[in-house]
Image 1 (cartoon, rainbow over the protein chains, first blue to last red):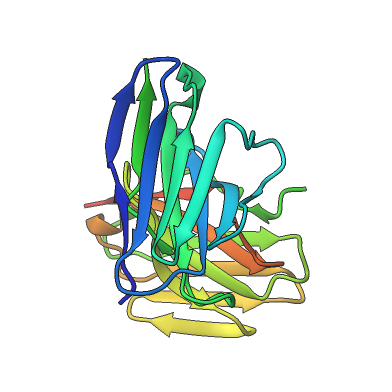
Image 2 (cartoon, helix red, strand yellow):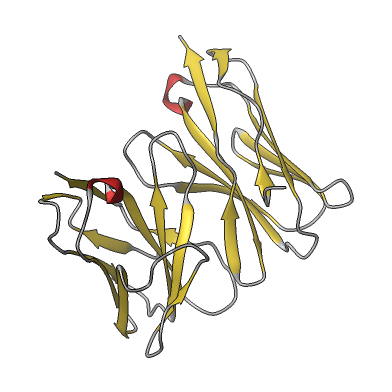
Length: 116
Length: 109
């Protein structure tokens, strides 16, 4: 089955630094990847949709200059949280789909980001 | 109005009983509906998908969809302690997947 690997699984960083999170589709080519954020006791909120070779589409209210997304290949998308602040502490989850029509999103294992 | 609503509070069920979860959605262009299970600190895991009106059964899980009422439900039969988790309802449409806030289920041994 489709497998999505996300790395790191957890990270602690100092306020003001940047953190990069990787999302890889291991056994399929992901034309589209999605990045979600989940705060404690809340649901997943879509941050952005990234398509291979083009700019990401950000959801309303998500700062594109703060959350940099790169989808340079069909198997890798990265999310960089720039100048992180404690309020950016959250659970970040990526998902991928094999083609442009929906057939069950596969989620990565998630990254727990703590900014101190 | 939120796109996908799950309004029930935490649900406690005895082991072996049926757990019933409900979800409504607001966007009539939604095409596909999904139930995900999420354990604390983990990412969501797809357990059921449903696309057409009626019931769909998979093992101990049954999903029900009523597009006229914009309503999706999930039944968990013979609930087990391992079913204790948060269940997220999701609707796909307009090239995006929208999630409800989730319902916590606690199965009491």
